[in-house]
Image 1 (tube, rainbow, N blue to C red):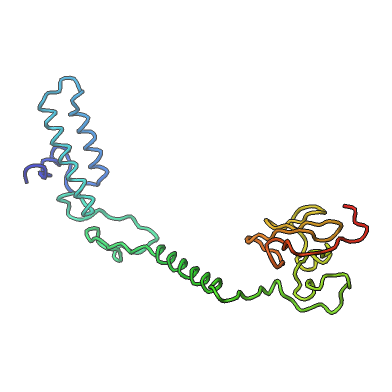
Image 2 (image 1 turned 90 degrees about the vertical axis):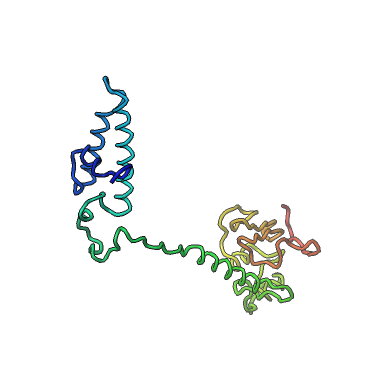
Length: 228
């Protein structure tokens, strides 16, 4: 061989044979580079040219080893240490390029977006009334206080004038708050004189009410002896 692929000259310069291990090959190369380095005292231009040719041959040999799994001129690829994985006979040859499998993450994510869009379209399609939530509607109560709003018993939703006990029976205990304001996450219910006077139903955690805020036209009377 000649030029930058004269690997015989490379092995002679390193004092090795083609069947040496890759680690021994690298160590011999580093040692030879140290001897030919131009910063050493007494080195000549010939040493610089020899170092440049050594670097070119070494680069070509390493590229060959990366592609074929062995050094140039070696009789066979170096032995692979045993492991718990598949046997060497079942593994593809280093010289065979295995086509990578396409990633499956994108199609799955795209399918999820499509299904979510279909669900939103079916739920909020124009012209079709949304089905009432089973958590809001309930059977009318047979026994109730005569002062309790009729809408509270017809649909079991919270209305203006509802007592704290009725709110607790319909929506459960609050997450936080105080006596005049019960908080259910981002939603809240305000009380005055022990009855509901205002609320806010957040879409993130909706209350069992008929609207986001009480209607401005809704009329209700505060309890007697209310001084708050």
